Length: 257
Image (cartoon, rainbow, N blue to C red; front, side, top):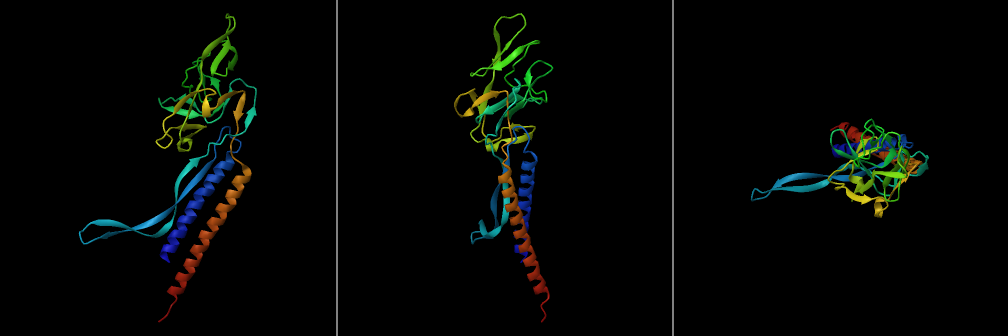
């Protein structure tokens, strides 16, 4: 019965984490570029150490010991594209990411959002962190646009025609679910995600840059509410197991000779 209590407790703890994850998905349903999370569950197996005649230590797998959360994975399905007509609103139609040069010297990755021209006149996130492409926008630049090849062009005072300011390139990952979320729509590469693979705008699965658009959250309310009900029922089932085990233990304690 003690094992039953422990196993049921792991189920309740796992479903509590599941509920927290679903709650975070629902809370960010209006967040630009937000990617929903899902849990990866796995069976926990107890192990006993035995020694054979040769004094060799061998772990012997025993029965199941409950359930554990193996990880929280990001789902990078593309969200709905919302037209804004602002030239500094950028989104990626596809699997690609923009590279961002962070203040600590590291590189982060984002799916886009509302960009600004920071105090050093570089194209940057709203936080001021510049894109790694290092595109500087001169004072007085007008009619900023991005070509199909990812070239950033603009009209400059005293210059005839459009001037190329730089090239925006995208990167993709072999396993984007392995990226580590940093908040504010930023991600860091990990061993699980693999190294970023460089791609030009419009090339392959990396997709293309959509100027004047913002990518909405990929949270689907119906799916999240269904998952919420399933998590609640699973939590209740584990609680019932604890209640039943407690009642049996009460009967055992009440036995008389």
